[in-house]
Length: 181
Image (tube, rainbow, N blue to C red; front, side):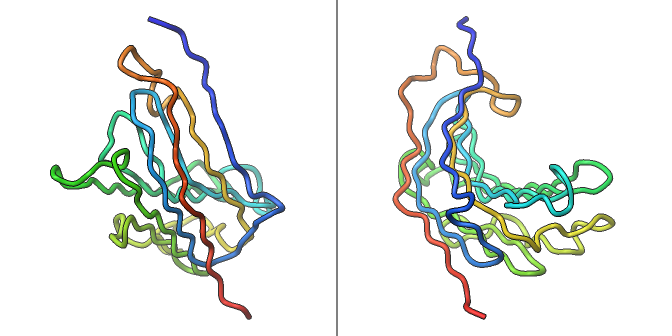
C-alpha cells in the first residue's frame, strides 16, 4: 500500500469576494475514487466571534469520492465546543452520479436561515438560529468562498489501488446573488 500525504488544491475568494447573505449557486462535476474529498464551502472573512468553530463555517457541498451519489451540506459553529448540523442528499439508484453529470449546488443564506439544495432539491431542513441553540448564530458576518479538492484525510481516508489519477472537480460557474440595500 502506498503512503499518501493530505494534498489539497484550493481556490479562495477572500478579499476578492466576501458576502453577507445571498444565494450562492455553483455548478460542478465531482471527481470519483476512494480518498477524494472535494468541497464548496465558506469561512468568515474576519473571526469576529473567535477562532474556528466560533465564527462559523458553511459547507455548501462536501462529497466523498467513494460515495458518488451522496453529498452533504453542513454548518459548523459553537462557543463552548465544536458543534455541527450535517444533512445528506442521496441520489436515486437510477440517477446519474455527481461524477457523471454537472449538478448545481445552492446555498440560501439569510440573517436567520441557511438552506442547502442540489438541483433545486433541499438537502434536509433549513438551519436557523433555533437549531444552533444554546450557542450563538455566527452567520451574521461576511464570509468568503473556497472550492477545493483534498486527497486523503480523516473523512474519506487515503486513496487505495482503485483510485485513478489525475482527478478533477470541474466547475462550470459560481454565481452569487444579493439584494441591494
